[in-house]
Image (cartoon, rainbow, N blue to C red; front, side):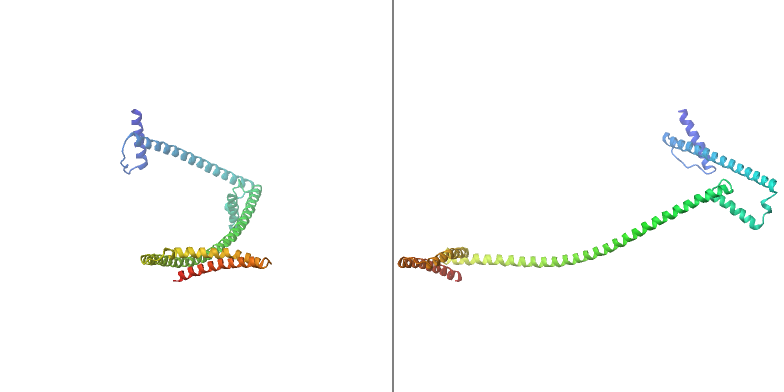
Amino acid sequence: MEAQEEKEAQVAAWLKKIFGDHPIPQYEVNPRTTEILHHLSERNRVRDRDVCLVIEDLKQKASEYESEAKHLQDLLMESVNFSPANLSGAGSRYLNALVDSAVALETKDSSLASFIPAVNDLTSDLFRTKSKNEEIKLELAKLEKNLTATLVLEKCLREDLKKAELHLSTERAKVDHRLQNMDFLKAKSEEFRFGIKAAEEQLSTRGMDASLSHQSLVALSEKLAELKRQTIPLKKKLESYLDLMPNPSLAQVKIEEAKRELDTIEAELTKKVDMMEL
């Protein structure tokens, strides 16, 4: 309990330090919010301590640099009785340019031994940058070439797609037309079927022979075609007999029998055809 009260007191002191004269925002005081705020205050305290250490280090380095500069200036005055204040305008500019170069090159001093390696390093960086730029240019040219090819391909694909859509539209119109024709033919076929059925029923009521119906006639027509097909080898066989020199009387009898059979078939065929026409 005492630890919790101590944390609350530390949080309150930290908030007062942060907000100063401004009012502290209202918040719900409970163990969880106290723990969160205490953790933030600890992190803020550590950060402030680190910042103070960095500031002190920078102040110390600045003091060292100032002492070193004063020492070098005194040394310069003692050795050559020279002071930067005695320089001309051009000399001051050259000296400032030398200092700026040393700062830019991040050298430890302005001696030639420090400048030459720094310039060499800078030259190497320059060559590496130029080489990298050339690589980037080549890659960019390659990308531009690929982009051009891609755009051309895209254009061709768009044209092909347009042609395909036009062809599809044409084919769809043809299919729709064929479907309409098919529906019309189906309707007509259904109409003819009912008409044939009604005609057959009407003829049946009038005592027509069932053998004269449409289906019977179709069957007879198929049978007739089959009989014609079967008579073809008989005729060929008969022709082969005609080429022989058999007994004239026996051959005449066979010929007469074949003729009578053929006449019977043709008469039956004629009769069926006439009935079909009626």
